[in-house]
Image (cartoon, rainbow, N blue to C red; front, side, top):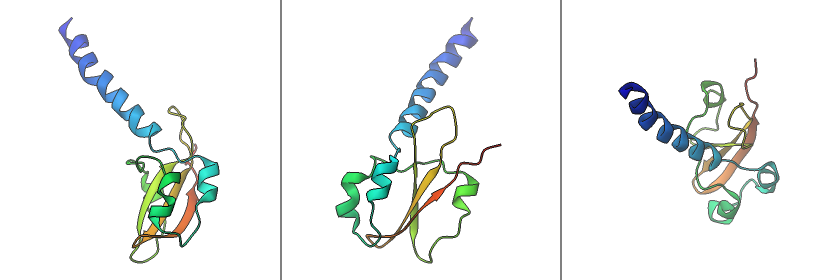
Length: 107
C-alpha cells in the first residue's frame, strides 16, 4: 500500500513538470516563419516561447552547426504523446544566424 503512494507522490509532479517543459517550449509554425535571419534577439524575443526545448534528441543535436554559433531547439507542436518536428535556431552573438527544421524521427 505504501509503494503506490510513494510512486504517485514522485511520478505525478514529475509528469506535470515534464508536460510544462514540453508545452512552454513550443514555437508555432506561423511564428517560426516570421523569424528573419540577421535580426537581433531583442527584436525576435516577442515571437519566441518562454523557454527552449531542453531535451533535443541526439539526432537533432548531431546536425552540423555553424562554427561558433550556439543553437537552441523549440518544439513545433504541443502533442505530448508523439514526437514533433523541432525548430533549430542558431545565434551568433545576439543575431539569428540560421533557422531550420529537424524532422521528428518516426519509426
